Amino acid sequence: MASGDIDVAYVAKLARLALTPAEIEKFGVQLGALLEHVDALAALPVSDVAATAQVIAASNVMRADVAVPSLDRETVLDGAPKREGAYFRVPRIIGVEA
Amino acid sequence: MVDATAIEIARAVNAREISAADLAGRALARIAERDGEIGAYLAVTGELARRHAERVDAAVRDGKSLPLAGVPLAIKDNMCLTGTPTTCASKILDGWIAPYTSTAVQRLLDAGAIPLGKTNLDEFAMGSSCENSALGKTANPWDRGRVPGGSSGGSVAAVAAGEATVATGSDTGGSIREPAAFCNVVGFKPTYGRVSRYGLIAFASSLDQIGPITKTVADAALVYDLMAGRDPMDATTVDLVPEPALPALRADLRGVRIGIVKEFGLEKLDPGVRAVYERAYADLQKLGADLVEVALPTADYGIATYYLIAPAECSSNLARFDGMRYGLRVEGADVGSTYERTRAAGFGDEVKRRILIGTYALSSGYYDAYYVRAQKARTLIADDFRRAFASCDAIACPAAASPAFEFNAKADPVSMYLMDYYTIPMSLAGLPSLSVPCGYVIPEGGRYPMPLGLELSGPLFAERSLLGIAHAYERATLHAQARAIPEIVAPVGAA
Image (cartoon, rainbow over all chains, first blue to last red; front, side, top):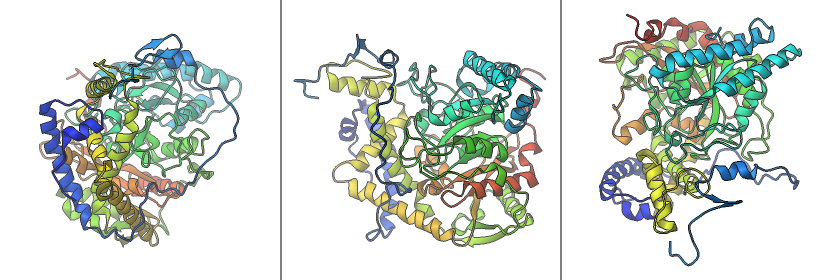
């Protein structure tokens, strides 16, 4: 693992975060310090160890395929930043390079 | 009565010695009187509290007995409660009204609890001091120049200041236990999968767990018993019927083996803090426990492991805050810039840092080196605990290395992350773990004796035995009752 070489502008693009040049600089220093700390994990012998995603052995959990009431549409739409009638109003995505 | 325990309040309300409406009024008056100084609540739900109180009183008049009849409840503001603001202390959700109620909260309301309001937290539960809240500042009731701990800082401050009898908290890496220790209350994180997270706004899904914050271990057992158990709305709840913990509380520790972790040697601590924990271990022994040394050789890797896994999961979970369906939207020239500007304006620095580190750890070329390696380290940490619990019934250690610190004392993010040294390993292993008050120390330059917490942790699903052990310790030592909160004894403004 290499430390301190995080390309904050690139990662911010992946994370959909607009950052100012000052923020890129600040987060670069802070995240570099954290990466130095987590680099300690390189010392652990893990080649033969299985990964743990979560600690409770759970496989797919199914429920009966029965329709139940869902949230009230008006209430949910009231929480939207923009709505139009019975719909969420969102920016155009077709024909746009995001 | 507003300062009584939940068990005492429920008994008195069920016996019709006091009405829930009367209690709700007194609790709301207490909030009005104190919360300007403490800042535990982001929203007070007075009207809702009165409605619930009337319903409880009607049920009691009809001859019903409710386990939390009239008990004033504070709810951490990352848990949904229908018709009330649920913000996660973030500008991105400021003003959003929850359209449903989280299962854990609903179960407490069904048991007769009175919802007083929503409490402050570090934004999206990311932090150890409550200073990362974008919507309010919460002070430690024991010294208002100090933080209450975090992320459940508002919930612990509410209970400590007598502004609620019980509160809900959520714990991902220590967010119930560390603040409980800082504010001299009991904070209990059950086993991962014991309590439904339906309606808890997700931070790190393989770690998040809801638990009670209370004045006593018995109250924690009462609230836990009501919260726990499978929920069809959360497929990660385990299909095990929890045995009630409240009847299993015990008076001594004869025959109990308590593990003391070799790697958590007290010599690392300040002398005053060290003396408190040495006495705590001696008190466990006096109660009849056998102290046995156990080894957790990989526990030192807990913070490094956690600060890859939790941010990775956070970066994925928080992708849903894109300004389309709820919360803030800041319009840009196109959809991409709308996403970017919304998230830039809506999230605070700590949330951004964690999203960035998580995105990085999951990105092409780094996934195996960081994320997968951390998941493997997690296996080693859980294995260490399994081996340790072969020779003990519970593990005792400090909940935090120091008492509550002053505001702005941990401006460097990594120094804040180190606060969770004693709580993160248990979270990674999914274990039930709690903090119980264990004494006081006057910090260097401090004005008042500040509380410390003893962390007790058990094997997976051993909540019942763990709460029993904690109760015996609490009952014998009564640290929570040993002192009064200095600034509350001398009311605000009084000489």
